[in-house]
Image (tube, rainbow, N blue to C red; front, side, top):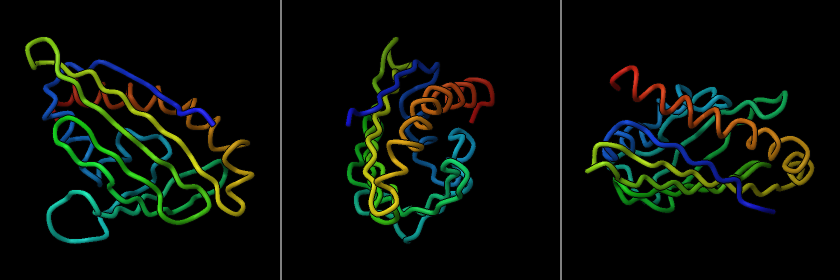
Length: 149
């Protein structure tokens, strides 16, 4: 299956964008399907850190554990689902432009189904992600440009 990719420009410095995106409890502020998100481990955030994200998927609410697979502030990050029927793989990049004052944000998502997820992914999850990702990036942009977070 093809990776779902979305890009947006944000009028904030890459460090500010990256810090906000990687601030786990704030995921529901800019990701429509996220109900809650929390760190599962202590210590510095980085490769190997785990996060529990609870999402609306279709009419269900599903918790999933995500593990950080790439962590290169303020340039890129990667996460992968390690449990549950729906296991996303996410890769994000923040590129600086306009002399470091603005950011070009690209998010790629691929989804793997396990068990019932093999049915859910093509019928429910991929269509939901295709619809939601552009809206999520717009929420990210609005939140960072208009609230000063």
